[in-house]
Image 1 (cartoon, rainbow over the protein chains, first blue to last red):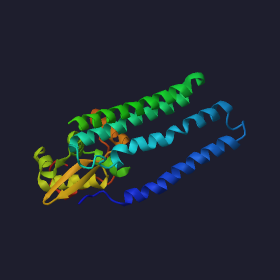
Image 2 (image 1 turned 90 degrees about the vertical axis):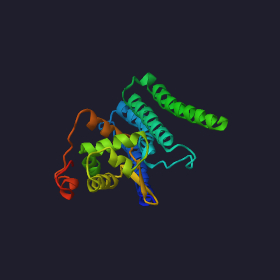
Image 3 (image 1 turned 180 degrees about the vertical axis):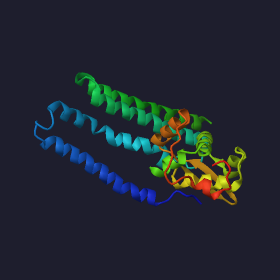
Image 4 (image 1 turned 120 degrees about the horizontal axis):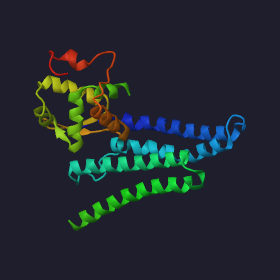
Length: 138
Length: 104
């Protein structure tokens, strides 16, 4: 028996739709608001930050909602530690993406943002690859 | 989010979460770490379950608790532990009402 409630999954669908609506709304607002209300630089920054928002949202949720993905074939403590590592790494990478997109000098903002999030993804994949390689040799 | 703040407001519950960060533990193992009665511990577990910060798995007569915290919730736990924040809730603590004046 587990207390993991199926409504958690069902509740996630309206949340995901709300997030999508907010993102689309922000894009439409940026596109249609006259320059008096939104300077071109701010509009550009908002559009650059937006892709990082869902990444941040889902990275934050990884340790909470990602179920045991090794099918119980792993030490529960090690599996929990891996889930926390993945969540923290992707969250920090996503935060870096958002912060770089919002505040870094525009000439380097895109590259820096992509580099930070990409580095986080690379760290996660490297850790997973090492884990599975270790299990194959064990 | 109110349930989360309520759950993190108590030092015993924060300590339970810190222990569960290391590994999933049975209710008995967790209770052994604290000088409180089993009903008090059960009340603490109930608050943590209501806040969706832990998950319970029952196998036979044994209940195993696992951590179920998002990164933000873990960061809140870290802040409240590091700075000794007493995050109070206006309604008071259910554990204090359900037990007989011991640690709550």
